[in-house]
Image (cartoon, rainbow, N blue to C red; front, side):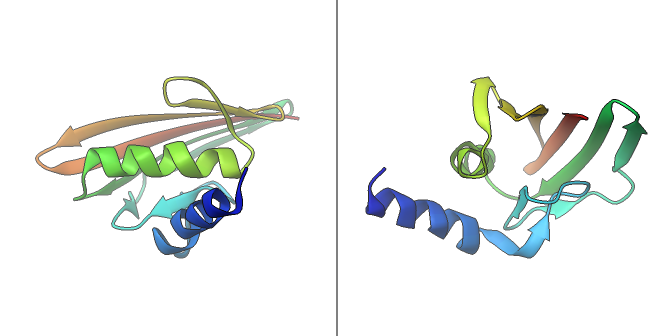
Amino acid sequence: MNYFTILILLFFTFVLADDENFVNGTQDIPLFKGMQNVEDSLVVFDKSNGRIVLTETEGEIELEKVKEFYHHILPNLGWVKNQRDQYFREGESLEISFTEINEKVIARFTFLSKN
């Protein structure tokens, strides 16, 4: 990977993500600028063999910008894309689904980890 690509990816990481804001229930998935966590959407199941996190974010922003952001930023965080909006990383999986209602984008995150 060349230095220019790395600089662009760092730009996406630090400029387009709100300062130190992350998707609820995650430690390293940045919240896209203009999106906010949906109150009361966080559901966490802790089990002896893993953890399941379900949460939503929303914002009045272009759907394609949000998709492009996560498509570019997640590989930098170690996530490998396997299917449409589904990513894997060392015993973890992350699925993101997007809907748009009245110019408001809703992103639903399903995070599964195995111990």
